[in-house]
Amino acid sequence: MKLLSQLVALALCLVTTLGEARTFEEIKKDGKIIVASEGGFPPFNFFQGPKLTGFEIELAEALAKKMGVQIEWRALAFDALLAGLRQDRWDMVIASFGVTPVRAKAVSFTNPHYCSGGVIVAKNPAIRKADDLADKVVAVQTGTTYLENVQKLAKVKEVKNFPKDTDARAALVSGRVDAWVTDKFVAKAALEAAPSAGLTIGDFVFVEHIAPAVKKGNTSLVEAINKALQEVMADGTYEALSKKYFNEDIRCR
Ligand code: ARG
Image (tube, rainbow, N blue to C red; front, top):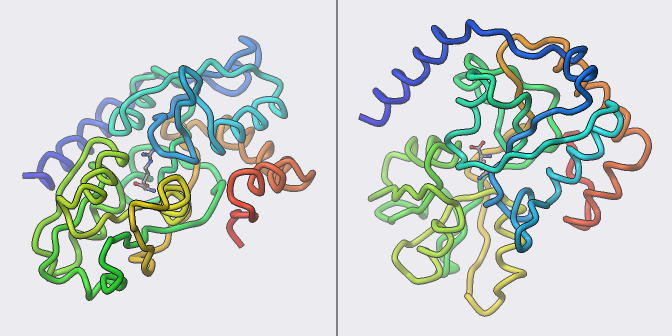
């Protein structure tokens, strides 16, 4: 069922990619770029009270500055973000999307803004490796690469889906599941935020390149974002932001 609905969604994507996305020149003339994120994936994108913030939000602001435009932010459910690109509802998405062949058919990715991967988080310190998930119930966010990769592990007892990654985490904390698979840096931040929850971080299940996305085929915007990325990575802006959030530089190497 899941796979079928994913295929239908992809087919719809392909046939409806007919409208024209705004080129970088048009965006520049307008002076503002519309960028969508989620706001539920700390420390990458989250809400501090009413304010959308995080590593990706601040990074996008730095990119926009280099591009000479202002950002108008939109915050939406994770699974609505890529679909909105094809409907021209926003120009760019930055929400920790891993570059996958399926997604790359529906949208265009820029160069990656960081490299990471899905790790196993559990309360039981004996659950560390992919093999340890045999006969276990695992929580993941719907529509993510975590779901996709955990489903590939043959012996998992059940994969429980949550629209929000923070709810997948909560399911682990309250003991409703045996493990949670999420981003390594999200896991680290969760452990630091709640040391008494008794969570431990295990191995990577997979690694991935994470990148901003634009409407499929919007080459001028891809090029403008890549140029800005290169500039912030060269002038220390990226490094400072990355160290602020992670105490290390998380760019792909
Ligand atoms: N990296 C994973 C993926 O590409 C998870 C992204 C989750 N992002 C979020 N804003 N909740 O599917």
